[in-house]
Image (cartoon, rainbow, N blue to C red; front, top):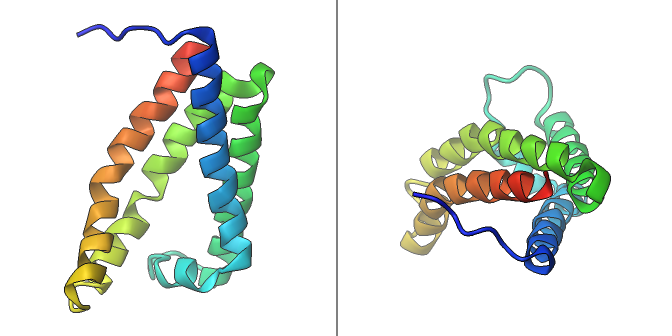
Length: 130
C-alpha cells in the first residue's frame, strides 16, 4: 500500500502542526505539571517532577527541530521515538483511572490508540522532509 505524497505546501503545514503539538505539550509540562507528574511510572528513578520537566524540555527541543526545515527529518524521527517512549505513561494513566467516572476512563483509554497515529504522522513528516 503506497502513500500519496503530500504537496510541498501541505507537507510544510503538516510539519508545522506536528511542531505546534509538540511545543504546546512541552509548554504544558511547565505551566501545569501536576497531571504529568501523576502519570510518571513509579518504577522510574527520581522525582516525577524531574521527569515531567525533562520530558517537557525534550518535547520543546523536538518540536523546534521539526519546525526547522534543516532539522525536520531528524526531529520527526525523534518525535516518533518520543511518542513511543511516552506510551508507558499513557498505560499507567489508563490503569490509574480505571475506577474514575466513565468520561475520565474513556479519556485515559483513548490516549492509548492515539499513540500509533502520532508515530505514523511523525514518520510521514520525516519522509516528506527528505
